Image 1 (cartoon, rainbow, N blue to C red):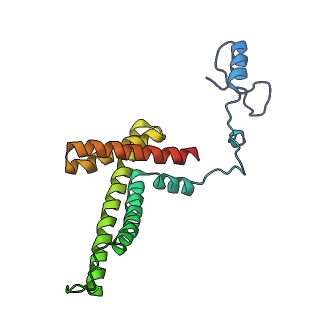
Image 2: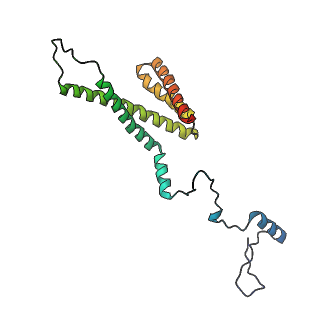
Image 3: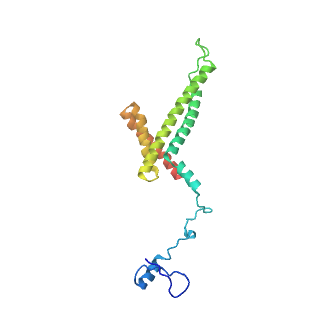
Length: 195
């Protein structure tokens, strides 16, 4: 491709680039290829409800960080710990191990009740945090491997997570736990995607 100065003018203007030896082929190439300039105004952004806004680099960085597997696992762990603590506190408050007031047993002090409540709450919180972290890590790994975001990721992740949790009690419990967790994950995903 050569650029030749215009011999007819004394000005230093430049003619169109020559790609072929034949001027007809050059004109045809320029017709199909265009003037080789790209304008920012030619970007086509699909319209949705509301104004169209191009994301800044900071927004893209935050979006990438929030969608990463590490962030998802951390958030699932923290939220699972909070939910488990709430359920553990509720479970400890309705626990029927209160002493009989008419029996000659030693009554529990408030400190013993709170200590037992704290241990129950912490136990529930740790278990829910572990389940949330494992489920989120497995689901994110499956989603990254498959390259698709759909209900199957949650089902597979539920099966693997339930199987891993149930394996502590044996193979049969692992299979039942995997099937149950997969069914529950599928039902939740169906409910969330159908809304």
